[in-house]
Amino acid sequence: MFTEYKNLPSNSRVWIYQADREFQIEEIEHISAKALLFIDQWTRHGDDLKGSFTIKYNQFLILAVDEGFNNVSGCSIDSSVKFVQELEKELQLDLMNKLNVSFKDNDNINIVKLSDFQQYAKDKKINAETIVFNNMVNTKEDFETKWEVPAEESWHKRFLV
Image 1 (cartoon, helix red, strand yellow):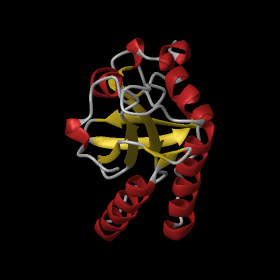
Image 2 (cartoon, one colour):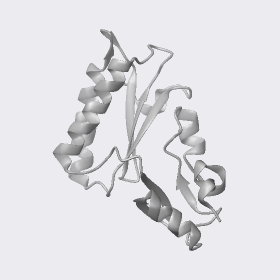
Image 3 (cartoon, one colour):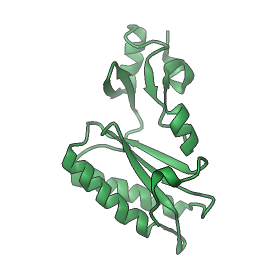
Image 4 (cartoon, helix red, strand yellow):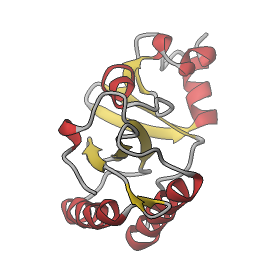
């Protein structure tokens, strides 16, 4: 059951999928249409889930579920992963690579391999103030307050020199 993202409670569970490239306008329309259809039929053992999605910076797809309405199950998470994998195939992009790291360079968003991020830190191209995207957050509140943070406030800090 689709609901507007802004109407979900702050403790809603989120999953963040970062693309390996920026979405084109037509792709955003495609993702949005597919996400609406998916969320409208998303269930947990036959019971509706109250969910939503949002797209940030034309590069991140965020799925969200109000677990106060119904908890997600392994099967419902599996179905969301299948949905994202279908998007990957249709749009020829990578949304599931957890070894990619994203950070801001002024207004540009960079997505690099973890090994490259580590090298950038060694070379001091990235520092404690570099804005990173902590895709490991798992609630709407954390997404809105702890997702886009200086590297020193994220798991990324372990790579800083």
